[in-house]
Length: 140
Image 1 (cartoon, rainbow, N blue to C red):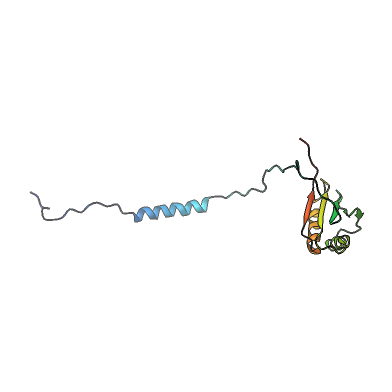
Image 2 (tube, one colour):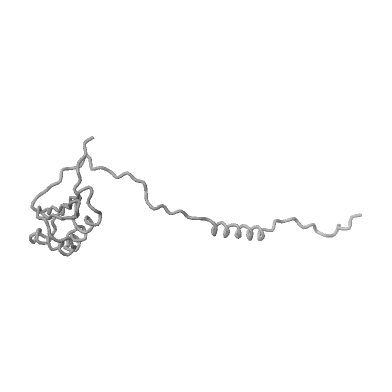
């Protein structure tokens, strides 16, 4: 006896809504429990200054030297103070009215980063934007 003769048979289907709910809960759990590592510093090898063109020193350039103790020389004249305002005034004086002289910054290898940045900031305050960092040429 076939009691289901007149009824249409329904096709089975997969209900995706419960599966999506479970995947969202797993995703939220993974997002909350994941730890993100921040590296404090990159391990890089800094380049050396080899095979560079010779630096053109001339009347349009101002030479600034930073000693290892932080003392600053502008065109071989040692400055008594190390403030940014005094450095900017010394750069303007050394420029002697020239519009855009090239600033050649030569720093000792053991000079502090802050003293070199102070020279760069003084050049910016004085209105000079052509900065060149002088390096020692290495031979292979």
